[in-house]
Length: 177
Image (cartoon, rainbow, N blue to C red; front, side, top):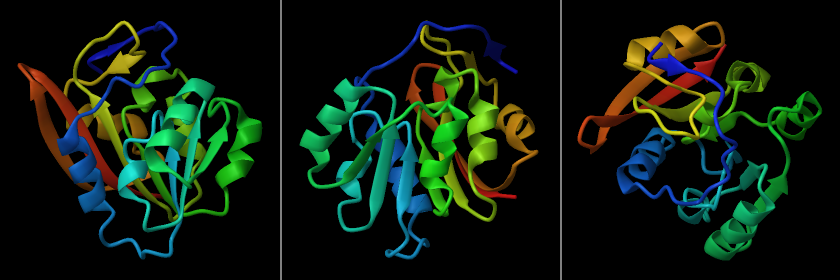
């Protein structure tokens, strides 16, 4: 793996990178519009703003971020919950479309969160290839990501997005086994 360590706790809303959201939306195109999209680690609602025409639930640990999400995306469902706490897995066990954009690199319990997603679900997620004081880990390439999560996910598609310089985001569409 590119890098793994303990990280500074992160609650932020400073990540706006349009190509990431465009790619995620493209990956969601074949999901029926009546399917609820559950965004794990929804932050300030950047993706929610683009999903106002469909059922949506955003879950995040930060009340501040959720307040911003409500202002940004309007009348959507947002839930304050710690995704690392297994009792909160019950919140979304009946759904089958999940998005985790720029979240898994911030928590030690990333594998537990991926494992908590119900079987046969569509999963769209992204992770970085660069270090940050708020990252628990980063990945050297898409293969490392697939190796880390292959116990739970079958990978359908991958996109590498250039952010700046050598910084990249790896975006995946997968099926929860």
